[in-house]
Length: 202
Image: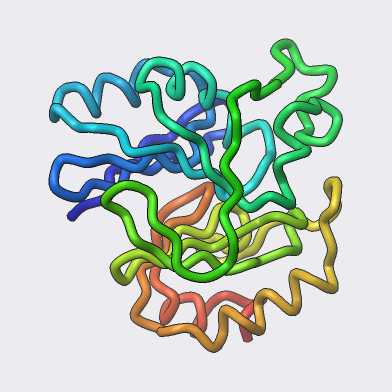
């Protein structure tokens, strides 16, 4: 098992490739960059699906091209599904390339989920958006724009909520501190490191 990280798009969003027995789960493909396909195909990976941490444009712009190329399904918290097809809601309205995802989305519920080879726990983590979610997989926290190294995601976008973010952060404080944290932007960290140094978790 391993996790590859790629930085995609003009907003430098992290796309992660989770690997298990040559199977791959793509997380947050934020652009149509061929880098994702090149990395997977070079290692002869078999794509089990695409998982989205939330519905903002910089995490979803590559969904349709990859879903079509690999003929795979797309999964996310149903609360953010409305953002995918609406540029105003996913914050791409007025940009040179507005983002609209047309792929069919399979809704994931909180708790244990299975996508191909990948069994993981999904935790509701609203605040950055109503449908923001945290994936816990094999000692790793894939958290989208909920938590960053030294910071947290903004709460002023569509369905964002400062009150709910505070509640989510309280939930994060109770999690296993040895978790390795894979955020939506910026470097990886550990929950222990954030509990010690992130002002939003103090």
